Length: 136
Image (cartoon, rainbow, N blue to C red; front, side):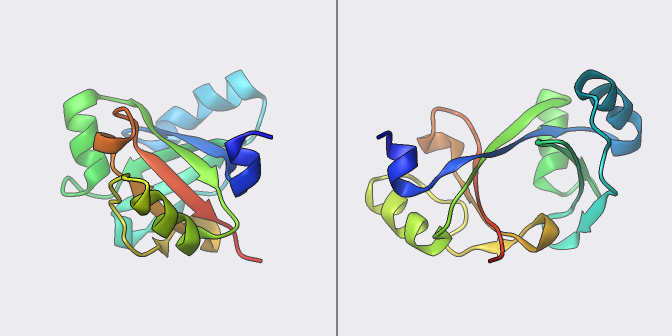
C-alpha cells in the first residue's frame, strides 16, 4: 500500500492560473470535452474559480492577490496541485511534524464549501500543494 492510500490523500485537482476564466475556459473545454462550471468568487482568497473536470481555473479578483502576483511573475500556467484528505486538521499536524512548512496553520474556506489549506512550495520541491477536505 502506498503512503497516499494509507493517509487517505488522493489527487483532487490541478489548478491553472489564468487572466480570465471566460477567455480560457474554451480551450480547456475543447481539449477535455468537459463543460466549465459556473465561476465562484472566493473573496477571502481574492480569486474567482471554475472547474473544467478536475482542472481548476483560478482568476485573480484584483492585483493584490497571491494569484495576481503569480501571474505577474510566471504568466498563465500551472498554479498548484491539490490532494483530497479525509482529515485536514490531522494532516496539517502530521505534515508540520514531518518538517513541511504550512502556509495555512488552520484550514480556510475553499470552493464548493470545501475546507482547504496550502503547503509552502519552499518545502515541497517548489510546487504549491493544496489539501482539500470535502464536506461529509
